[in-house]
Image (spheres, rainbow, N blue to C red):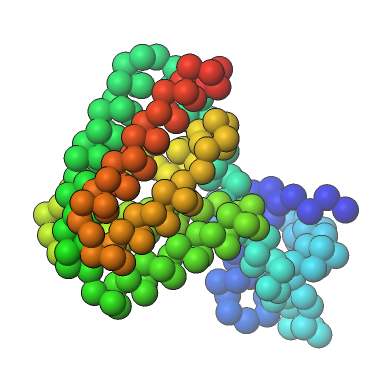
Length: 241
């Protein structure tokens, strides 16, 4: 049986998850209508039968269905794929040199800010923040090994370094630039096309911070950002069409 989830499947699963208790088909019909998705009880019944066959929901006697751990994982994966596909489609529309220049301009600005946050973080980072950063790295490496998206973990890694710098203005500036067309999902897609990863770069930055070596931390983050800039150029030249 095809285990892929369409938008209506996801809405049904989300309704069941958000209910916090077993949900029946009529309650789902009403909830979907409130969300602007008009459907019949028979259609909901077929959806629930399929979701139950896949192990994504489970029936609890006559009370209705509840979400299973497998269903929760399937939802997360489907939403992640949808997000990456959406960003990929957006990215592939960006084919003129003006847009490339804008991407590179923001990356250069990020490079300038992150080299300073890395230096300050090396000087100021606490053991607690180091442990937190190492946990992020371990999560990133585990997700990568499973073939899962590391986009959110990448954002958390860079944001944590900015926060560890102790400079709230630089942290705020990083947050603004990171959202200016520089979504990690987009770069994750590009780097997959050019067969590039950044796990080693992140680990090198972490080791420099752990050693409280500002020069090395700055050098590592510059190499990381230069690598990302080069990946963008390669993608635009060879893979964007």
